[in-house]
Amino acid sequence: MMRITVVSTKGGVGKTTVAANLGGFLADSGCRVLLVDADIQPTLSSYYPIRTEASGGIFQFLVAGDIAGTVSSTVIPKLDLIVSNDSTGQLPNLLLHAPDGRTRLKHLLDGFELQYDFVVVDTQGSLSALQDAAVLAADLLISPLPPEMLSAREFSRGTIGMLERLRPMERLNAPVPPLVAVLNRIDRTRDAAQIAGALRAELFAEAQGRVRLLDTVIPNLVAYREAASLGIPVHRHEAVRPLGRTAPAAFETMRALAREVLPDCGLDFRRRREQVVG
Image 1 (cartoon, rainbow, N blue to C red):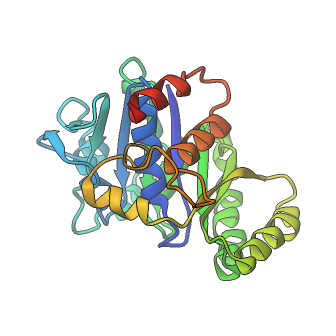
Image 2: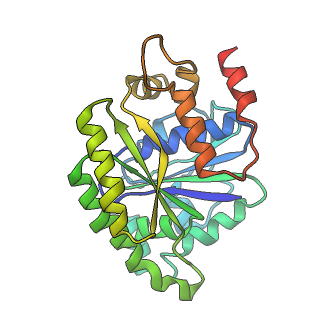
């Protein structure tokens, strides 16, 4: 079982969109996937319609260690979900003062080792013990990065700084996982291309190898918003590139992202393309 956490210390960069669509793509590729909504603003929890709703959610999972009663199933086959139900925002404070607070999610997810191939965790866009726990529970971190210099500076200062702060947790057998960044909401304009080039040349040079910037970029397309409104993965909504557009189809983007992030998973993405288009 591989655990992926989508993280950024800045809100509004597209974490939920990436988490939901990556999870949906992996499920449609034949994998058993668990989404975990670790954001106190429960956007991921309502991204896909629920088929069978559990009695609990992330609060019961983290506070009581309840595994059986916290997993809901979505209408997407093989895609399950632990919803965010901490409406009063108690979890960050509870985890902050618990002796095992920052490692609790990591150990609880061990209980799903035989049930799922992937766990994808969505996080809140601010520093907290809950975000720390989601980071330390992962095998891989993905950080969406809009092509804006303010977002880039926050990424360098906030997200990379957070990882450095957590490095001493290695002594508690909770090492900080590798981080990859994906340029998100890229417009087909000269300014966006120039900013993307500047990020590659300057920002990630400063990171000194601590971050890998993916070759895959996620275009700024209405298809992502439409798919979220319809409650379906974007690769289903736009399987083929519209005539006359240069940006790739959403299916192509999600396939490229999955291939680059998970090069050794051995999934037959070509077969899934035929099913979607057919």
